[in-house]
Length: 248
Image 1 (tube, one colour):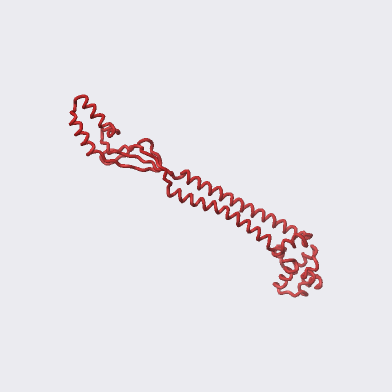
Image 2 (cartoon, rainbow, N blue to C red):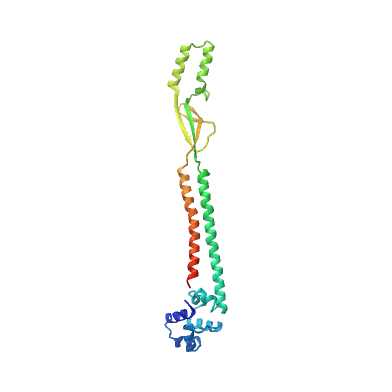
């Protein structure tokens, strides 16, 4: 919208005729007609008088004007120059905010995906421990590993016969071997003791497997969304600038 079109639009919106507005602005009707038909360009003083006659401020009047009109035919008016300068400052500030927001989204999204992949907050590994059975009071924690060795020493010392040794070992295994397995998201060392009814269990480390947790799957998914939002925000800012450059 050029200057003449905007002037006529505001005059019509106010319900004023050309003579009425000319009287309010203190100008000739013929001159007002030239302005509305873009056959003349107002001076700085005349522009101020027209705004006073319309009862609007400069921002309201200039907001709907084409960029070309602001930067060419009206650039000699100080208030127009101030308006365009302020518009540029506001645009730069908005662009910086969009860019900062997009960069923040990229950093946060990447950090979330990295944390999920590396298992920083929730482990992505499963640590498996195995216990052969319950260790009774007074027994060594490794009794299941050393039982055969102890019986063999007794056999060598003639404290047992081979038949007695075999029977005692078979009885021990049938009565005491009750293997259990525990899976943990974090390492508990090479072994740990767990108190149970009737004694305690010694769990020895067996293996460690990669198993991405559901929490990390969700975190990585959210990180990807945040990362994409950064690009979407940048695209929206670019589109907004294009729209502003095309409209009044």
